[in-house]
Length: 541
Image (cartoon, rainbow, N blue to C red; front, top):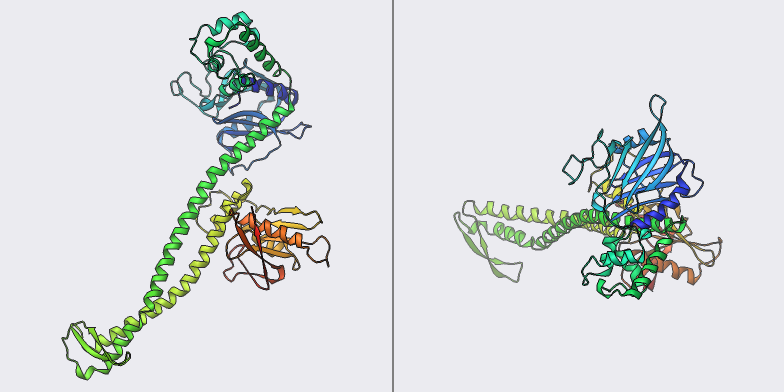
């Protein structure tokens, strides 16, 4: 979590960028994330992120955009009503606490100028965003009656009160003697790092450990701090905090990049788990069907036993009588060996013969149908495993949306969208080689389908790992008429291998001209058949 000192430096930068900017649009893409688009920003960072996620509370400018829900939240609508079009007039921090106030000047419904305040409480699991006017709460991201969060109520029309503040000291207000006196209040066995973190505003456990580690003080106890070490410690802390009083665009970029990485990993973990669970469940169902069909086919191989028994009974009806439970006959299909045939005493020998023929026909027909169904389920499994491969090799969050949409089309997950959105343009990753040739990569079935059957030219070279689901890769020559260089072919094959398999072993990759690639008869998305191909073996390690 970002500490109070880091927020203090970030606030300096935001003050230099936000004052007199107007809030153009407000979005609520995730439960604990508010995104404010700025109207007058001349910087590329034209969006303000407010994150109250306990694992990463932050406030920073960004250029990133995020997918928004079809219906804005009630809190988002409230923010839009009161703040959109408003001018940011002030932004401040309460000491080095993770408490921030943003003042916004706007006009109400009858045209009167008002000053609204956004209170940002970036305090781990107690984090919140509260909108107020004249210290009276208008709305809050999380509302609490008295006693729910332990110390105060947060409800509309109630007075806003700051959360209970600590009695930690400001380092800037401390002398060496005062710091010494502060340390002596604690037991000599106490950790120096934890003692400073609990006593001084603005430091987190990690930040104070990092600072002390620069001088090798991170493992010290309070009792080990002598007068010389105290002076060095005081100077070290003063030098560190001095750097937090000037705006830093670099710090904003660092926070933003860390947040993007954090959110990317969080969404990947959450989304991957859901999509993977759906796929695994469907794969298990298909594998179960496959076993049933294979058993039926195996049973069909024994169907001739019933036909033989029926024919032998029919040929010997004149020798048989009713009420027999079994009969032993010569089996002229097997070198005149004898065969014992069990009979149902409820039926005559003729009916028993018909029943054997009927059972033979039923098993034979079932075996025939099972062969067809087995072919279908094998095709289905190949397709499902191709989605799983895409999911395991995903390169960015946007590709999750494409895979989720594919699962929606398959009916494996429900369409959560309230209304149909415009289809997004498929974006294909491309790599330019040193000689100018281009490599295009499809990372999932939607991209594979678009790449192979819409984007690729007939004379482009098409690559795919052999006998396994994976990425479609297209190699396009820089100049028409030229032959493909061996290096370009090798690079494209390596790309196909790396995008399709986590194995570093030798991988076989087939390649052929795009004109020899056709849609699979199943017409499944991204599923193709190809001819006139060659195979190259590459090592993706």
